[in-house]
Amino acid sequence: MREVDELWSNDNERPSHLRSAHPSTIPARNAIIYAIAAYYAEVLGIDTIVAGHNADDTKYFPDTSKEFRRLISRALTIGTYIGRARGGLRVIAPLSKLSKTEVVRLGLKLGVPFEYTWSCHNNYDVPCGQCSGCWPGRGHLMNWALRTHSKKQ
Image (cartoon, rainbow, N blue to C red; front, side, top):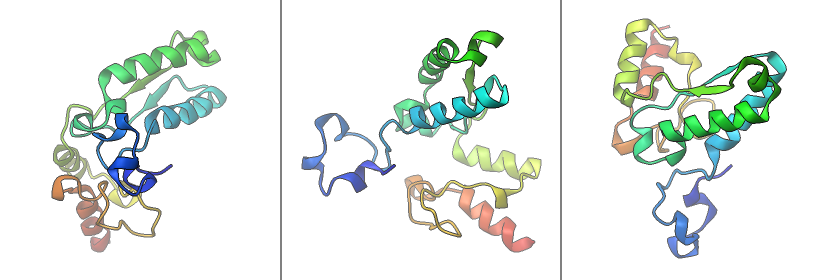
């Protein structure tokens, strides 16, 4: 999966419906991820998919909204055996009302092992510090917390 700014060399080549999309948008990303998660939920007998979206995500990505989660939960309920057997396969996002900064603060307060978390969009050994997952709005704390926490160990 590629971000829209990687798929086309300039905005004029982009389909018109994606020209206003955030540069790090990956078309249908969460629909794809939820479909894969539904496969594992079905195989493992799990009726809840937990998403890590936060309040900042909904400003840019339509597939992180409460409405999208409600509708995809309904589709997964209808389209899976686990959904039918348990009366629902739902997608929840317990951090969806918190900003990224608030998520990091909560994680630090709860002692989250940040060395096992990842928000970088690249598949490197360490966060790149350059992509929108690392620095949306020029100030993302998650990877800072990860690097700081990891250095203490």
